[in-house]
Length: 262
Image (cartoon, rainbow, N blue to C red; front, side, top):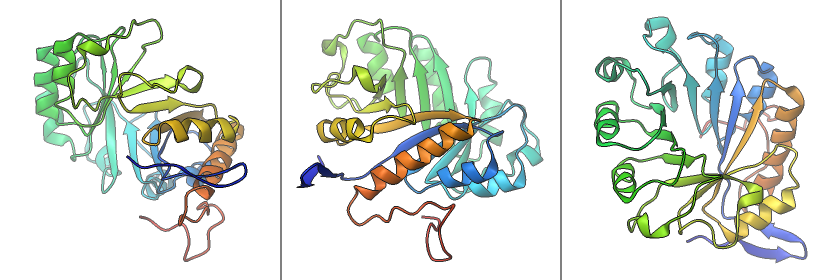
């Protein structure tokens, strides 16, 4: 496991930063571009199945990106899904065979409720690279076994759930989503974390959490609000500046040799 090293009084050197940013397609284009960093996974909420060309080009600057869509999709709607950019759909009610035919390969899926064998069979057809699982309680052991067969699973909505680590099989890598204020030094059953942080969070609190959990990822919601997007950009810059060997240069201010696509 990577370690965070103290490099000076009050300073931290982080092993790396990975942040998920949830934004709206209505966000000011310059602000969205400033968030499209190699360290960032962009999740873009939409009202329609079409993206502006400038938005589609901006998404290619991020480490990866997922765009919310509603099947069925035509050829114009599929145009942005190249390289590291993929569609993001809700599993419930989908014709999974049809989705598999049009999906370009990097699919993110929202799923709800127990992780049944029926759900697992549907996901095996779709082959998502990311699954956001809103369980509504702590899963049974059989659910953990099914879920761990898929990559990129994030389990959320556990605020009122009783934790039973005995139900979690060994070598399970399902990522637990939780707010920063709920993260303890012990974590949750040794599972990796995806930690929700407000864009205006004290960066020192984030540093402290990453020292305890170096493999944790961050998640911040900005929507279409310019102030939240600017605060998120500053947070990313601060965290990247604490990562040795990584230049803290945002695409918004980068010169021709900076901020390029990874």
